[in-house]
Length: 50
Image 1 (cartoon, rainbow, N blue to C red):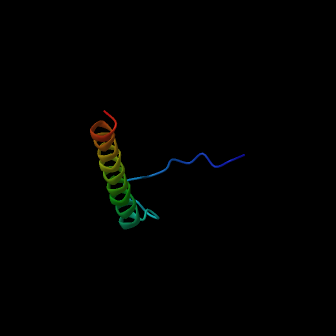
Image 2: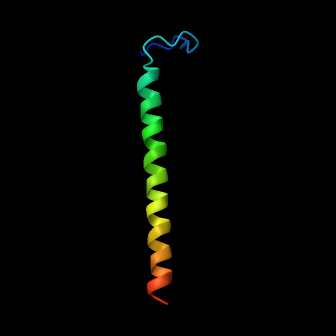
């Protein structure tokens, strides 16, 4: 059977927090860039297609 021992997160052994933080910052940057791009496209469509 599998090991059902309790996982201790407070020690954070094996957790690569700098990598997690880089990934989070990249996710936020991509999200903000995509949102800005979509807003720009919608604004240009409103200007040129009306």
